[in-house]
Amino acid sequence: MSVALNANIDVGKEGDAWWYGVLLMARYAVSARLRLSARAEHFRDPDGVRTAIVDGVAVTEATLGAAVPVGGNGELRLEGRVDLADADIYDADTASTHATVTAAALAWF
Image 1 (cartoon, rainbow, N blue to C red):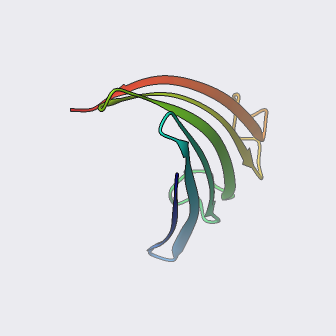
Image 2 (cartoon, rainbow, N blue to C red):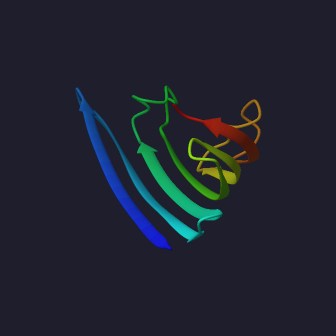
Image 3 (spheres, rainbow, N blue to C red):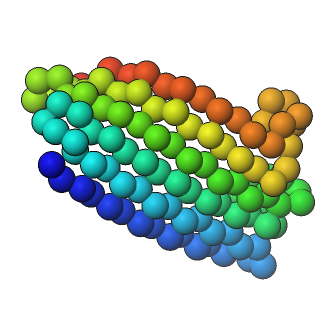
């Protein structure tokens, strides 16, 4: 069993405009056959310089996942994600929340 933690902060400035993002991640290896993960991100673009949203926007996302290793070079993964914005930017600008579920088969060489 092992735990991995990661944090990241990005800040950018372009002319008088600025933006920032914060990320927190965790992965927990329950056993050799199961890994659990969680991730949360917050991105703020008050001047719309990165998103092209004139009035600016703040977006937060949260993701929970489970992964099962396959051999030494593969993994089956299932993730659920929710995105929350402070403006209606999803579904043709009619919603401030968007949820997805992803199933993936990964291989690396």
